[in-house]
Length: 224
Ligand code: SF4
Ligand code: FES
Image 1: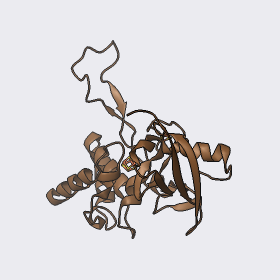
Image 2: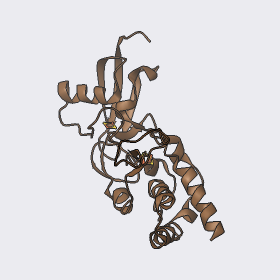
Image 3: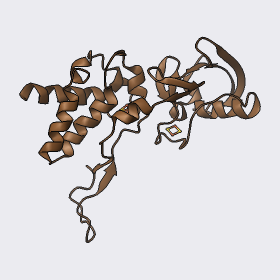
C-alpha cells in the first residue's frame, strides 16, 4: 500500500458516557497507538492510555477499537476505510482513567502459572553442552482482551486463567500440583461457567485460543 497522509476522526471514551473527538492528519502506515501519541503530544496532553513495547509483546495497549478488542500498537490506520476510529477501554475491568484499566483481577488469578515452556521449534537440533531443551515464553501476554470480550460477566475465573491452567496441567509432572489445578478449573466458576461463545479465541492477539484450552479442560473433566 502507498503511504498517504490522511485525515482521521478519532473518538476516545473518557468517562462512562462521554467521548472526546479529535481530527488529526496522520501517515496511514502508522498505528492507533501512534495516533494516540500524536493527540497527546499536540492536542490534549491529559488523555491517558498504556503502552510499552509498540510491537505486540507487552499487552499493555489493549483496548476496544471500533467495537473489537485489539492491541492499539498492532492496529494500522490504513485498515479504517472511512477514517473513523472509536477507542474505548476494555470491559470487565475497573477503569482507572480514560483507556487505562486495572487488570489486576485477571493477573491475580494467574498466580501459579509458569511463563516458560519447551519450544516446539528446533526440538531435534544439536544443543550446546548443558542445554537440555530450547525454552520459549508462553504465548499469553496478559493483555486482558479475552476477558473483556467474554460475555460471561458473572462469577467466572475467565478465559486467560483457564487457558493457563490447561497449559500448566500439560507441563506439570507433580500429581499434587495437577490435582490442585484441576480443582481450580472444575469449581463452579471454572469451565462450567463458560457459555461457549468463544469470543476469547477470536480476539486473542497471540493465538492462545483460550476456547480450545477450555474445551480441553472439559475433556479432562469428563474423564475424571
Ligand atoms: S489469552 Fe490472549 S487475549 Fe487472553 S490475556 Fe492472554 S494474550 Fe490476551
Ligand atoms: S505497546 Fe506492547 S503490545 Fe502494544
